[in-house]
Image (cartoon, rainbow, N blue to C red; front, side, top):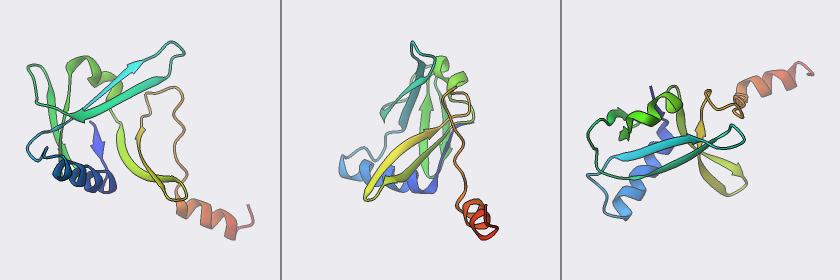
Length: 115
């Protein structure tokens, strides 16, 4: 299943309203590129035959059949990668270059333990 976080959902809703896409679902796609990693695309689009639609994070998401296997278990998030720079990111355990994020609580407890 594909998931949209609260932060990503809120930003997508802002974009939808700003660009008059209120009634359109978000289409996401992934493809494997030459080095084996994944390339992602997203944009507002109508659902088509064979698409799967999921409702997550307050957003309707459509995924074409050929992209479903690559996107299974993926989470779309909206995070600050550098100070003042928010970006959409795909957290996809199917992508060979994926590294699971370290939770802030784990970092804080490790620091408290002297690790």
